[in-house]
Image (cartoon, helix red, strand yellow):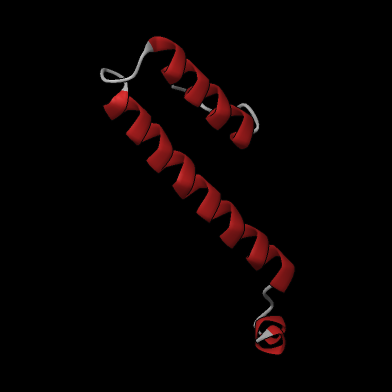
Length: 64
């Protein structure tokens, strides 16, 4: 696989990092959507705790 990527002028390490980043972005998007749908049924402190956990996981880039 690595040889084929290198032959096609694709950086294998960069490809893996991009795939990992895309998976993280997908998780963050789903988690944000879930939190918004559950906001009405969660206590404020629980919702804030979960938002903070998501922000810490994302490196502080959450915009909920």
